[in-house]
Amino acid sequence: MAVYTKVSAEEIDRFLSRFEVGTLVSAKGIAEGVENSNYLLETTQGRYILTLYEKRVDPRDLPFFVALLDHLSAHGCRVPPMIADRQGEKIQQLCGRSACLITFLPGVSVSHPTEAQARSAGQALGAMHQALRDFNRERRNLLDHDGWRTLAEQCGPEQLDNIAPGLAKAIARELDHLDEHWPSYLPRSVIHADLFPDNVLMLGDQVTGLIDFYFSCTDVRAYDLAVTHTAWCFSDDGTDFRDPVSTALIDGYETAFALDHAEREALPTLARGAALRFLLTRAYDWINTPADAMVTRKDPQAFLHRLQYYQSHPEVFSS
Image (cartoon, rainbow, N blue to C red):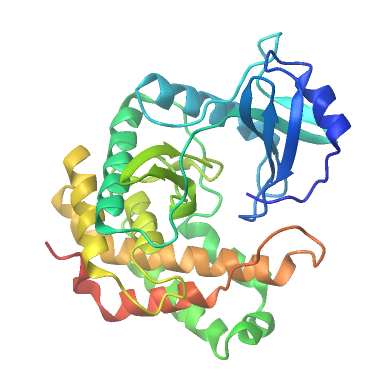
């Protein structure tokens, strides 16, 4: 989450008049994240999230996200559905942006997950994959294996090397490796594709919500677990691997959705791809985020360190 588009209290109050949610009491911009503009709203009837869709979200994809959240909610997954206005519409316009009012879920995002919290997150991800087995919509992953080379080119070798000396060549070598070894033959599904700890709400050790589905797409299903592993099982800077958290996350996932042999065998490669994907998108954002944006830039090298760990320790996923 972040704030790129500034919205006044008067504009928010007029926006809320379209809904049966009471009148505005307070609005606070949320600085975390890098994708959309988000506000926490307090009204006379409760709390809500207002999201304005920015650079990477195509408004044409919003019906997919609406259907996805409705489907998961109907199957008992803890996700925040978008709220319809008095005319039954969920997709709105505000300040020249597509916008949605979203159900607020209780809970907090943990900064340093425990084993128990990782196990619960794994279970929630597996339950989500179970629920999506009969979801018949698809959305292309614009940040899939085929798109990583283009993203590296958009960053540029000189600017990549400004982040870390030799980074451009390291990325080029990894791209070649993944071109040769990427397991595109594995089962595909709609996936979350961004299940970092800040996209999981928890009370104690229990998951109360999975949020921020705006990277959701159709891709290799086990890649979703690899992304989550990459996000949950290291220190913030990526230099320390947390093996007990890794074991708990995968065990939790398999209590809800069992990996087959080919998926488990491919996890080391999928995790390298996940680390590279976030290294590249963080590098792109590091290079291109406006200086005056109310957003926290994230260090790309944290995922370079993860990538280097996966390269050196393919045995980390051995059962």
